[in-house]
Image (cartoon, rainbow, N blue to C red; front, side):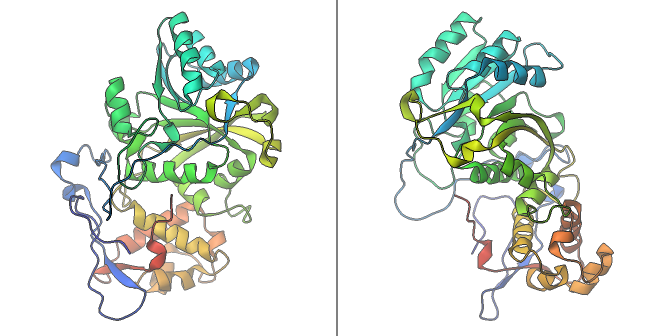
Length: 391
């Protein structure tokens, strides 16, 4: 069960449990603009909370980097096509943060187009040739021994490269935060990890909604190759209910999603540790990969949702999809002490409406109605599902 942490901005406070059972009530103490401490305050939608170390017990540990198979772009034609897509406006000196560039095919194409590149490479075997590439192409390349997909790991303990925090990475690169309303000074490009696509997408969403990690530096645009299967899921809606899920709702509400390009897996090579080519191909490698663009919405925090109450919204959406074919009115009784029928009437929805019939905007509207309810001091009911299962 979650409890308030010392050092966090005014946020959510648990009321005392008055009866036995799994449920507790959560007061609607979600932070609003006037409640945010001055050190964390910007313009109305420019929240920029600082990373707070996780509270835990026991001895601290050192994070170890476990090598995992990684897909790399090894086809010059693919690299050139991607650059044409990414560099349509040809902005001089545009900065890209490339995740695990490996042999550097895309890196070279970006540099030759006039872009500047920060290469975050987690395999030391590729770093010398990337540094050599940078020297040959005008010094517009900075190479960092870093695993982008493991920035800001949850928990506590000492971090050793390639595991690090975004604060350390960008401080060393001389990059400062931008207001949420102005976007970000760089774009991210890469290929999602072969075996951890789903967890990586969840982590990006947590970072985005909380405005932490890379999103502490503005509305960072992420351009990533994902499997076609995962792409269909994050873009699903009630018209394709078998693929529709909590991840679909949260991703679509947070970002504009575009499929920029589709490429067969044969255009990529999978490497394991020390730059060694993987011999055995995985079954998922038969899928196509979709190059998608995730552009965070400027108005994401313009209304009730904030970086300080997003976890309540996550809980609500995930709880609903645990019984996806159930009626919304039945879910409401386990989510909030506010009268369920009154909520349905405010939403102007039929009482027979099912979870899979709700569009992402409906979930946002539901959250806003409960958060703004005046029917009592408590807005939400929490159970053991509230425990964070993200690793």
